[in-house]
Image (cartoon, rainbow, N blue to C red):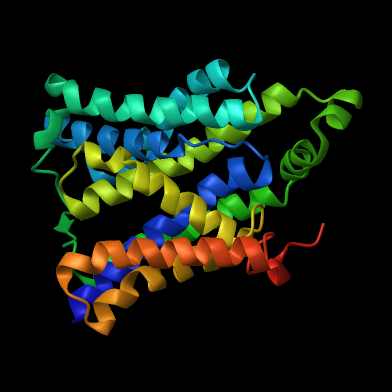
Amino acid sequence: MIEYIFSLIIITSIWTLLAQSYNLSFGLTGLFNLGHIIFYGIGAYTAAILNTRYGIGFFPNLIFAALVSGAFAAFFGLLTLRLSGHYLAIATLGAAMIATVVATNWVSLTNGPLGIRGIEEPEFFGKIIQADSLEFVVLMLIIVVFCNFLLYKIFNSPFGRIQRAIKDDEIAVRAVGKNTFAAKSWSLILSAAFAGIAGCLYTHYRLFLDPSIFALPEIIILILMVVVGGRGNFKGAILGTILVIIIGELPRFIGFPDNIIGATRNLLFAALLIGTMFTRPQGLFTFFTEKE
């Protein structure tokens, strides 16, 4: 039981960071990017490849994952950020589907559908931190809290206020002399960097990685977390993530058969999304909206 609780805390913390990184670009800036899971996967594969092939450990991998994901986002932004609305959504969704194909077929790099095994657990001053231990839970929480603190500062900085203005009226922001393309690019790059860190955490926790990390259901759950919490709402994204994970675990606690847990979970997620859209389309936790 204790191992399950530890696992739930770790997965929740990783998803919290991933959702908050998406909240930066999608919620704060209004970039309807359906390919955010690409940055998460790139961070995860960066950590897995560097660890298994070059022996680079957990802590350096956090930095490398952020840098590689951020660099890819810079290139990705050049190709997509001239688009907006549904056009951006379609283009980025296509990119996410391409990422799955690449990860599956670039066998020499990713080992294809067989995945990458032999990933090492974090090591701190010569001590291996087991993935099912309390020390690992504490380490994950420290990293996630620190990253969320940085994101909180970004949300409430002058940069964050420009992103909110772009979401509300991009033309007006251009009219006062701001470079909106550069601002949106940096929003995408920063959100990708934090998503890459989340991917690194996932890799060194699961110790195995395959192309399913780019799966479409992961994108839908990510959008659900941000929408339920409230787009652009910092605290709401955290609470939305926790709520979605709790609802996702309900069938297991109620005692549903294993063969229908997945379908039941999807029905609950659909009901949550529909209920949110009909009752509180601005998000369930708008009372936590930050004061400008």
